[in-house]
View 1 (tube, one colour):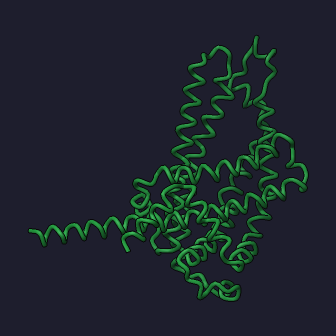
View 2 (spheres, rainbow, N blue to C red; view 1 turned 180 degrees about the vertical axis):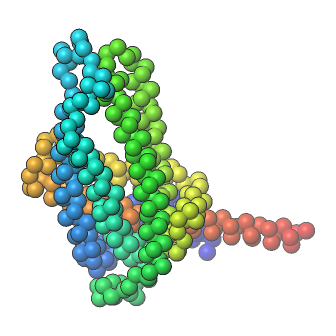
Length: 318
């Protein structure tokens, strides 16, 4: 038994092993794939609308911040000059984007996460008794579990949004101020380094936050308790969590950036396949979070078991 546990730990010793296991879990049950597609449709359709709006906004913003190199040899616009270019419509777009991001987008995502996490955990633990398509549709969500998951989700959104605002502030500072030729290269390096460090911590924390939501759905803990337990399980596994989130972050941005560059958001011919691939990555991310949670939990339980055995052996020897 001890050798089997050791092999299990070796199997998922790296983030790539967790990703491979997540793909296996996803592909293991056809009913899971069908039901996930059905429940993800509202989230997908909203994403098509939201992403089109977001990419148009990002293109307009980049045009405001860009300047002709010949122009700023003689004059560099101050932040006040930039704000003069922002009309009421721009402010309205920011408010609209923020409202869409904070409420409907995340509520629709939560509805898919509840299904994915619950079913993926059963597949991972080989509990296939209720994994028929009929059983998935008829399975109710208990009010207390749903309420607890929503509370944890609000915590996660708050923490995530605050960190994202910090990243946006660093990028804005660079474009508005530090690209001024009067600033030295060191200032740009400081800003760039701060951005990379904050992005790394954001991805590391994101793995912890996602695990806390998995804990709320599967274990019934919520809020601060779920976050605390997630931090406990994540201790010593931060690198694996960071790599996992980095993979899905790169996946999302690699889908978005080409569309921004080539203006693909102007036609549904490109935005629909982009969002389809993004939703697939989102499902795989949450399956990976479930596998990551179970692996971290098993490691902690095994460590405790070994410590208890050690204490008993010492007591016998004494």
